[in-house]
Image 1 (cartoon, rainbow, N blue to C red):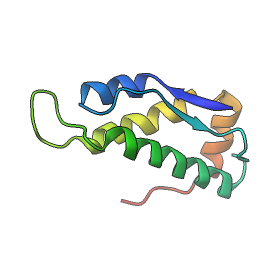
Image 2 (cartoon, rainbow, N blue to C red; image 1 turned 180 degrees about the vertical axis):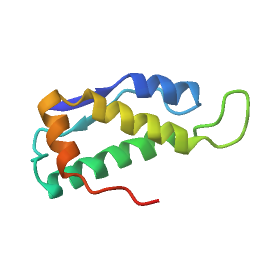
Image 3 (cartoon, rainbow, N blue to C red; image 1 turned 90 degrees about the vertical axis):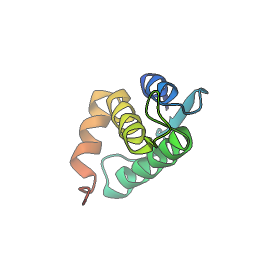
Image 4 (cartoon, helix red, strand yellow; image 1 turned 60 degrees about the vertical axis):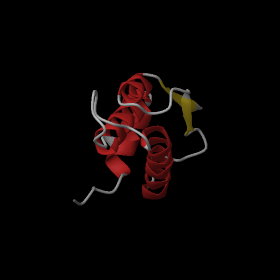
Length: 97
């Protein structure tokens, strides 16, 4: 199974990032384990890095890759089927800022 990021892609395109479709495979991961959730996070992060590397704020040259990456992460998680999303949420490591 793969997630197709379309909404996040639109956000990224508006922000000035690449306009190609991005797919994130997850069918081979056990999202009910911490390792599987971490692997999914790593795939999402790689996709966000690729999609958002040149993101800028609209009508500006200021970098906006952080907001773009947050949109990619939110879209990726929201596109997971409900059961997989629940397993992922229960097993992912908290983000420390």
